[in-house]
Image (spheres, rainbow, N blue to C red):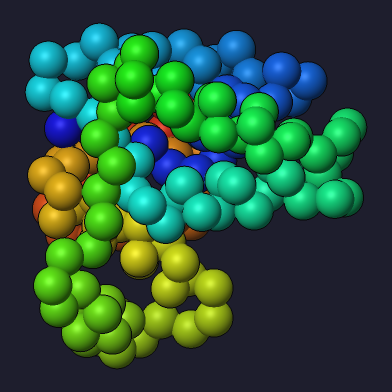
Length: 145
């Protein structure tokens, strides 16, 4: 199963960014995989925060535009949305302490844990510094060969 990181969602939503076409292609490829794909709830929130922010590049997306994009990924694309289950906060805190994380890297950890617990074995991202988590392979689908 494949998890899609926030940055790919943003690029696929924003037609004016150079990564748009490649990100849409990556999501379409993930959606076609028989093993399935999904998005961590933390990525949904992060996506919303970025694309609707008043100072977003170009213009901010409206709530309706952001919602329509996300809904299409679930309804037409078959994406699962993963949430942290019972005790998630304890696992997040323990993993952050074990990995000696500092600052905003904890947000990547939250996404990675939700994805792994949702059944993902890969996370597709455009963030070269996305946290490495055992059992969740980082894949960079927009990287040039």
